[in-house]
Image (cartoon, rainbow, N blue to C red; front, side, top):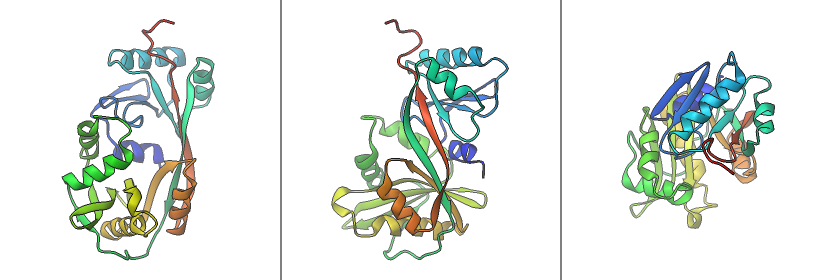
Length: 239
């Protein structure tokens, strides 16, 4: 699987520009994934390509960020480190063929509803008032939105993106008071069963060993890794 492209397509920035084999992505600064350079091919001039990317984000008031996964060309990571870009958020890609049925009844819709959004953002809202931009990213491609609910409250949620014969699983989040009840497993299983693809993948931070253990128990294994390189400051800023 070309995981770089799968993740890119499942979490689409609403502004995208191709420059010399690189995809420059912007979505209001909400999530690094949708606001970073995806290097799909080696540029003709590495230094010039980096400077063009820095200018792209500088005009949007953002620091330049690179997503470095399996498709990143040789030498790019080292050059960014030399330029002072910090390494952040090492992430693992996990894939598998889970086949268990959900233990709870899970609601699945074609669009995120308010309760789904509130629960997801309560757990993963790292960007303050950016929920509207995050919703715009989520709904940029067809997807399914799943939740286990009690008394009208979504306690655990997830998002499934159909991508041919594979399902991309995103936005897995469970409210703190509802954890250790198997609700995340139920949501994950419901999405996989609803998709009917058999094969699925997801991403999680390398440090989140608890989530990785849950996913391994559902038939997922680590199949790849990526990380981000973040500029110390915007290119137009002075020391």
